[in-house]
Image (tube, rainbow, N blue to C red; front, top):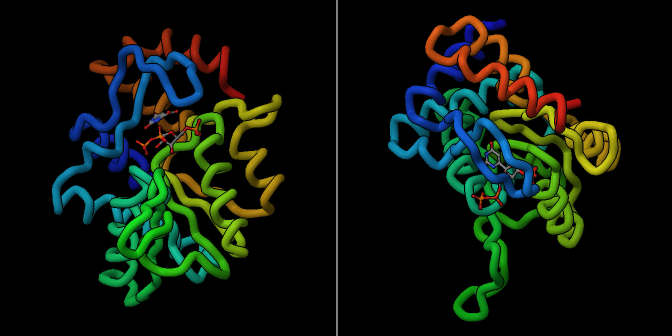
Length: 213
Ligand SMILES: O=P(O)(O)OC[C@H]1O[C@H](OP(=O)(O)OP(=O)(O)O)[C@H](O)[C@@H]1O
Ligand SMILES: O=C(O)c1cc(=O)[nH]c(=O)[nH]1
């Protein structure tokens, strides 16, 4: 496993972002682990998080006009990524966010920041069953923009609506690249070798047998 993946897993564990236990997911699945990106909650952590995404974006030479961070956790991620792209690579890209509820006063609407137009780079924390990304896709289409690529922190490698993984379905349906900093295999490999966390392997294995691809 590449060093940056190990660093990212250690970073997430040290901030309590990656936790083991019993968690109910947006999809209703009961998971033995959870990635709570909201706990990257200091300036230093968000700067470091943004660097991980910015490096993945640059290393893969993604082609996009605007960064879109879907509510809620995509919002600080989108900001952190745009700042990291500017600080590290001198790239000044527009950023856009949505509200989960439409605002009916002031500027109104459900989008904040840049217009959502042309080629969109969507950034979010995790993909599980793919519901959040499809919701974001509805907004992108409604604005006549095109999804160009998706970058997430953790690919949980779970089934979507069919026997394919949620990410395979997104790539098939929207013809876009989906990149992640780490995936479930990286996480399993890491915890197998770590005496503090290898106790969670049986539950992780069982969950993967049920929902994994
Ligand atoms: O692939 P899925 O099955 O859709 O699950 C993953 C999504 O679930 C969470 O969003 P959620 O809307 O729960 O939360 P947030 O408002 O905390 O970002 C998470 O941030 C992902 O966006
Ligand atoms: O599927 C989800 O709802 C989900 C999984 C996860 O690991 N983290 C998160 O914020 N949501």
